Amino acid sequence: MIDNPKWNENFHIYSAHSISSIIFTVKQDKPIGATLIGRAYVPVEQVIKGNIVNTWIQILDVEHRPIQGGSKIHVQIQFSHVKNDPNWSQGLKSPQFQGVPHTFFKQSNGCQITLYQDAHVIDGSIPYIPLDGVERYVPGKCWEDIYSAINDAKHFICITGWSVYTEITLIRDLNKSTGTSITLGELLKKKANEGVNVLMLVWDDRTSVPDFKKDGLMKLMIKKRILETQMFIAFCVRVIHVHSSSEDYNC
Image (cartoon, rainbow, N blue to C red; front, side, top):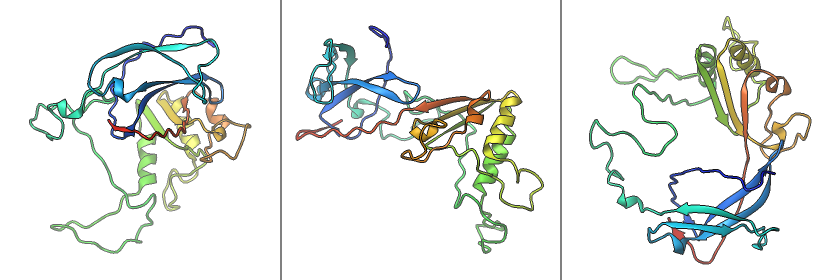
């Protein structure tokens, strides 16, 4: 464990649920998951009026008792009501709109979203559905599009989610000339060997770790043969914490 760690992190967090305290959770990173050290609490009453709170707060155990050594964490917090944001609920007021602030990925042009009715649709299984003009509805094939996007990637591949099952085959149509025998894991390995940056972020469930335990919460599977490649795989610790109080505030 690192003595007197310093994070020096800054966050803008949108909150839309009822809380009684702002909770800072401190954990020790482990090869499998992370061990809870303790939690520190800042009552909402201290920040709800918008003043800056700059203080040291006690780290407590699960019984809300100070942990051994009396450790504290230094935080600085300021609450700002969303109605104070001049852009809130105003929509796109002008072409100069820069997008939602304080997000990881900035707004950009040329983006596209595709909606699917199913992961795979067999040719001819959907009846003729006319659209406006002379167009007709052609259902998309999600898995095949994912295969094409990965296979054609030149710079990077980013996969996030609860689970990544590497043995799945994305091309299910036997009439296809390519892709029917390659699994997702083999496809990702191939792209990594071609020099494409393959990035994966999945839950740090027990089944994400080979040869450890096979009955985790979400049945996650990351095979050892993938972990040993050039891909960068990060496991995000899954946190389940229920906090209740008789007095809550909407933030």
